[in-house]
Picture 1: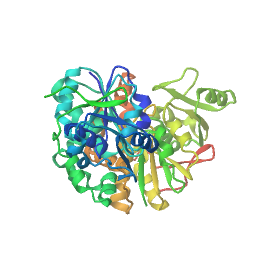
Picture 2: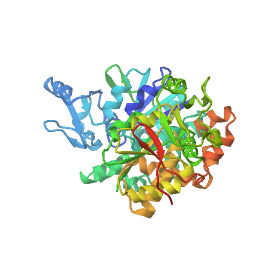
Picture 3: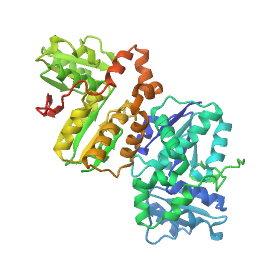
Amino acid sequence: MNIEVCFSPLSYPLFHNPNAIVVVIDVLRATSAITTAFFNGVSKMIPVATIEEARAYKENGFMVAAERNGEIVDGFDLGNSPFGYMNSRVKGKTIAITTTNGTHAINVSRHASKVVVGSFLNLDILIEFLRKEKREVLFLCAGWKDKFNLEDTLFAGAVAEGLIFKHGFNSNCDSTIAAMEIYKLAKHDLFGFLANSSHRNRLQKLDLERDIQYCLTPNQCPVVPVLEGKFLVKSSFTL
Amino acid sequence: MNIEVCFSPLSYPLFHNPNAIVVVIDVLRATSAITTAFFNGVSKMIPVATIEEARAYKENGFMVAAERNGEIVDGFDLGNSPFGYMNSRVKGKTIAITTTNGTHAINVSRHASKVVVGSFLNLDILIEFLRKEKREVLFLCAGWKDKFNLEDTLFAGAVAEGLIFKHGFNSNCDSTIAAMEIYKLAKHDLFGFLANSSHRNRLQKLDLERDIQYCLTPNQCPVVPVLEGKFLVKSSFTL
């Protein structure tokens, strides 16, 4: 089973593969928030591309999350901080969500045969899920506004390392090699490695060090969010 | 002076910066061939996008190089093997050239204020040239058919390391950090590090190990090719 890593939603058309399962990655913070939401009992999420769509859902009575440039958009209750979803009020709810990068990446890949959501929070269960799927895997890093970023690359490297070294997957793709090499360098201190990264600096200015620490701590939320039509739902898969 | 690294011509519009000097990189093999050509006395080169344009130059009596998928295109004398340019017949000539990735990258960036050509063959003189320019630098990796590749990334990392550690340049760009980290891992054995890379495997099948060894050996051709209008010429800059 072959693995590829796509560093930006802009490049997705070059990698589209009808046989592959797509793992969408936006570690800081959309896919970490989504993983946390399902772990805390959210029923469904609806990833939408624009603030206008998000507003329409809000006017129709939905709970709605909207983030742009790291901050909650005026008029919305939730953003993409995972801590916003650790709350009993989200239990059983359907939440529409739009973020700067993560929901864009989900929308770009929605015609793949299967799309799942990855973050360090569901690292081990995701590796196990992909192993059992026995299919090619395409990691789609959300990046920052279509540019490469380090934290999504590190996570792609973490999963690729697990699948290749332990479960017989393979890759002949340079971006997979790069992701695995960078993960190997960073894995013992993800937080330290990212100290100089552009997005961590962006979030530091917003005083979000607690979010970053949480998002970089593996296996706190063993659930696999999967796209079904326009909804993200929690897969029935368990460890 | 800020440094950015763009991993693919597809992403160039996200990075375009009117103040920056663009370094186009296609280590295996277009920018290595171009650097070698100027070191061996070629007068001008004309990078063109298509085989049709190349053919038109040929019909008008020019010496023309054309490569696609690693091989010389039927009907042309030269491809992108640097060894093709180590020949007295190229001295003083104007050569039109089209390649799978490298000339595409040059064409994508041709509206930048200055475009130069980089390869391991001109590593040290390029660092010195950029230091004296005292401007922002954008490394444009040609990649492989708009996908990320390792060898161009390694070279961007090599130059970035020189500029940042020795000459006071800086970067807050994740792709620069990634390129420098990967170069740090690979620098003592570039050939070995690239053993599993996709493009080296592609060239291995074409029996081009000698080309790869040459292209990965720094500082054999201390010249800086620079774009002037539609021509690449040799900069008057010397070490």
